[in-house]
Length: 131
Image (cartoon, rainbow, N blue to C red; front, side, top):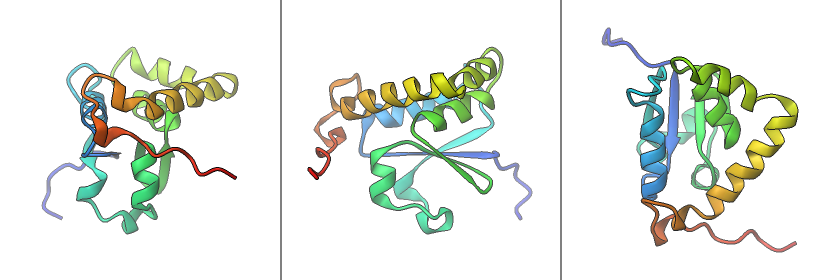
């Protein structure tokens, strides 16, 4: 070990998406001060975490020790590790009834990230496969 302090969480974002890059870095900036490090999923060995490129390209992933949080749950996990007042908000987002709404909103944002500030055609997700 090099003696450097490692953050307890790793926020994995899509470096090809400007919206994702900006949003993930905001989670670890001075306002949130989350005990987390934002890194592109393209820059890490996903096998170390049991993740795939396809899954990481779809949604935000947060690795916290041996646990992996995805989508809205990932945002909630980072907020719970941030400075006040964010932990309380993160706990509310994790409540059973609220969690369903959070995932729905997360999906809406993820599907439209190419239309949001910082988004581009590279951010556009392919439509889900028809059954």
